[in-house]
Image (cartoon, rainbow, N blue to C red; front, side):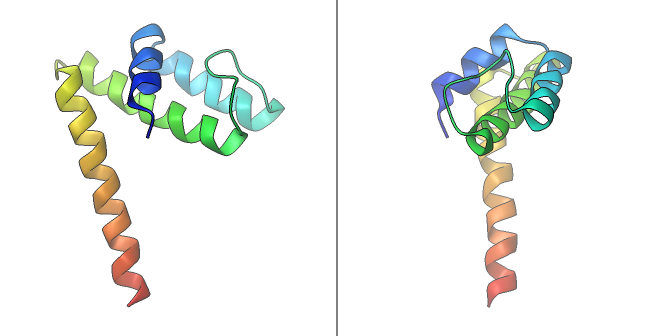
Amino acid sequence: MDTRLIKDIAQKYTPDQIEGCIAMQIETGRNMCLTDATSEKIINELAKAEVIRELTDEGMSLADALREIARRMRLVQSGFQENKQ
């Protein structure tokens, strides 16, 4: 996870703009928010930035929002690991 990139996107764009960039990337393979990576990485980073922006808009500090997204990612990953066993 490129935290600097995610922070920059979250601070620059609203959640609706980020969602629009995700949709544009899926539909056309291009978007205005992030351009210098593969489509998979772009969509992943934009989705994280969208959640970070929503959390900070609700009053959470940027540092706490980053910790929260990392916690959520760990929960998802641990769920997949349990299914493999």
